[in-house]
Each structure stands twice: as C-alpha cells, then as structure tokens.
Image (cartoon, rainbow, N blue to C red; front, side, top):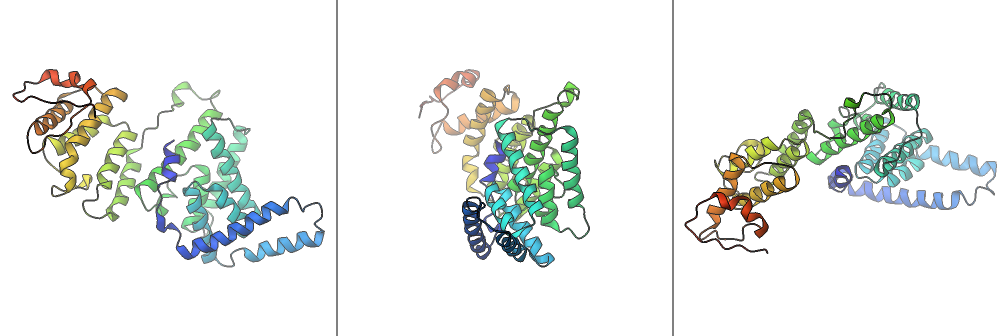
Length: 337
C-alpha cells in the first residue's frame, strides 16, 4: 500500500542520535520485561507488583517538556510504521491507558492491512473517535501530543503542524483515508451506495500542503518535480500531469512548482522520462493519446533520431502505437534493451 511505502521514507532527523540511544536501552529493558514478566507472573508477590508499578511511575515524564518529547518519540515510531517499538516505549515510560490506545491503533491498522473487519459496532467506533478528539483538544496539549491522538482517529489538520516533508503529509492523508475506509466498511449496510467509494482521490488542499514542505529542498533538487508528478498520479489528475509534461518538453517552460530550472542536468532526461510515463499511462491508466501527449512522443523521437542525442527509444512492441503517425526522413533503429 502507499502508506506502507511511505513508512520507509522518513526524516532521519526526527529523533536525535542521543535520543535513539536512550530509546534502544528502553526497548531492550521493555523486551526483557515482556519476555520474563508473563512467565514469572505466577510467582510474583503483591510486593513485586507494587515495586514494578512504582518503577513504571518513576519513568513517566515529570513535566510537560518531557511528556512532549515522549509524544514526539512515539509519533516518530508510529510514522515509521514501527508500532511495536512505540508500544514497548509506552509500556515502560507512559501511562497504561495510553499504551492501550497505541495497541488498539496497531491492531486496527493491522486488520485494515489484512482486509479484516473489526469486532466494533458503530457506537464503539464513535466512542473511540470522540475520546481521541477530546484528548487532542484538551487544555495544555502540545503539538506532538495532539498529533499522536489525531493519528489514532484519522484526523489530518492536527498532524500537519509536525509534518516536515512531502512524504509526511501524504502519510497523514493515507492514514486518514485508511480510518475513513474502515468506517465505511463498518457501515456498508446503513450508508447509501454512492457514499462508499474506494478510490483515493488526493485532496488538492493536501497536495498544496505537501508540496509546500518542499521549500526546504535545495535548488534544482528533482524531488520537488517528482513529488509534483506523484501528487497528480495519486489524485488521478492525468490531464494536468500531461499538460505539465508538455510544458517542460515541448514548450521548454519551467514553472516554480516543478522545482527544476533550465540549467539543471535533469533537462537532458526530461524527454525520456515524460515519454516513458505517457506510455505507462496509456498501458495501465486508460489514458488516450491526445495532441499534447502525442507532441511529447514526437519531440522525443525527433530529438533522439540524430547525433549527439541518439539513444534507445521505446520497446519495439510500442512502436506501432505512435510511429505510424509520423513522416520520417531519418532511419530509426529500435532496440528491446
């Protein structure tokens, strides 16, 4: 899934090296606790239980700054898809009821991935959402605390402030759609058919928020261009995508949203990328060749027909798809490589 892919693309600076080292120690201790805690449960005395509870309380944050730092660490692991790590840290350093929230979210996410239905009725789901929203909006709640609760209930607005990258924003959106899809699946018998839509059209507002995070990228970083392309693909805005490709390949115009200027090395690769993407859209996305997409392919073939740009063009099975429309004065050599 898109969300699973985004789990692997995270900001490495989200947790500092020193904090990672502390987390590792905490995780080892939590793992030891989980390995031996259950097996020793039959011989633990009430005093042992009291001592363990006292130890856990001593590890909880003593002030708001520490608590917010804990929330940041938990959020970062959730964002990375490392739910087991988040739960282990929460078990050691957090309130038990918050650990339950994490475990419930992890269980829900796993069942969504497996396409299974939760044993929740509508009332239980509503209680869950309202509880998370109440915690999210309580007095004194800081950014990462709000973001963590917002992730649990599929909220977007309160997670955006902690997003650092395009991928972060997209992950938040996918998480929200995942939770929304769960609710639609739960309510299939009561909602009208037109309200149940599995197509994930990316909201233009979310696209804008995500692309705004790219302002931190260096000049001529092609990530911004590819983020723009990916956003249009995910929002199924193919017409706008082809127009964008036509602008850079045929009109040789580069807009600020593309993030790449005319002096970039990427200029030499634009035709090949755009032409390959056009053929992909035709083969897998139901796109029909129009004037703009045809012009892109024509420009690519003409550019590669002679020195110094002669390169392998397209797979031979595609040549009849568009070459038959053109007159050629140059013999073109095709290769399957």
